Image 1 (cartoon, rainbow, N blue to C red):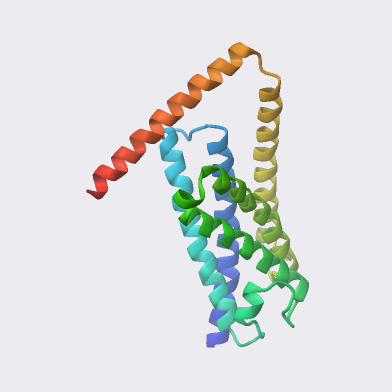
Image 2: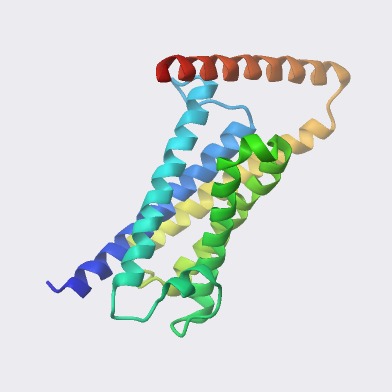
Length: 211
């Protein structure tokens, strides 16, 4: 097997893994926003899992991009990776991937600078992570070479169905929240206080581990 063939397979494999991991990131992000928890995990455990999978997804995305740039079968440059719609190869579909990457980079940089820019600004920019998912999905559908395969079709349909279901639950929850009575709002405040206490406990545990 030639080096180009290895890079081609690596690009395909990492693209599929990125779809799975970033879908999990979106689902866990919505779970955290709903103040939900996974079975067997406290709320701060769900937050920690969301962070870990986000880092894993970023690592596979870096591998995916590296394989595409290094593979000489098509001409994809570093500029094509960072600047949308300037590539000679599949400018529309590759450009959408670049847009998704730029949105993710904005989220990553602001996450690293969260202590300096403030929680409100970070949350606002963090919404870009949700916007990047459908853009990346369309990129994969348009440029992917496995779209005709049954397994890829079912993987894509499953990811889309999962995200749409979670988003529907999030919208329904927001709609109910807008109609809450004062008593319900009080219970929500109590839950928020519990969530803040759990978050402080997580930070103390992390600080104790580092020391």
